[in-house]
Length: 90
Image 1 (cartoon, rainbow, N blue to C red):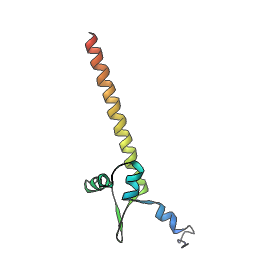
Image 2: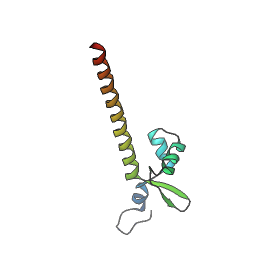
Image 3: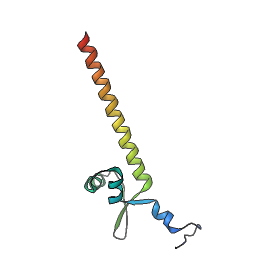
Image 4: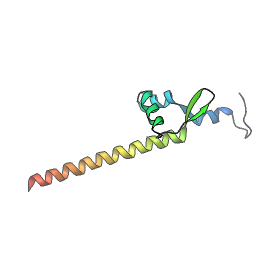
């Protein structure tokens, strides 16, 4: 195994990135969805030779953003539903 200058293995540097296909599989979407997000500049990529990789921290940030958006949508739906029910009771 090749060692990096900091004494750690070069695999730790590789682990800091994930492929488009792996990330898509991880979150359960088609890779085309990830490529669309890349084209929309929602996800930042890094190109190494012929490989397109996503920094692990960027992937995690995207996931966190999706969770926050989903929570906002669900909470907003609950609020609107509750408001609608209260209006019907009047």
